[in-house]
Image (cartoon, rainbow, N blue to C red; front, top):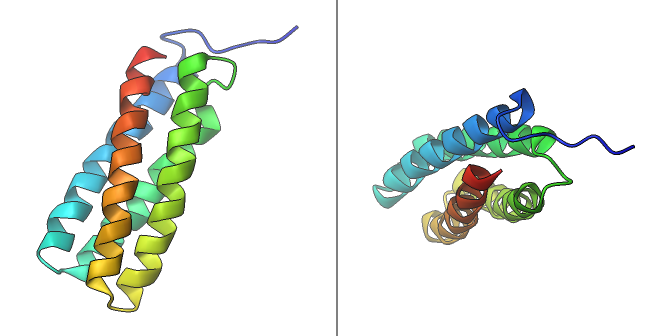
Length: 116
């Protein structure tokens, strides 16, 4: 028997909270990246990545929206990894390019997280 997380379950609520926190960190990341505060951008990118990973651990894989959340967050994490590397090297433009892509995936994931 496959057990899935139900809407309103602790796992779904935890995933939704992490996705919301991820988007909030991402907004801060973008704001500081636009100002070329790469050290602060880096901090928010790392926090965003941690929330994305935490959300993926509890998102229901047997739910259509849960699967979409996981796919979007996986893409966001890949771009965050690149943004972090470039921010550490002082490559602001490249860091922001990946940060923008990460945010696009994060926002799309957040839409699906609301539907879980």
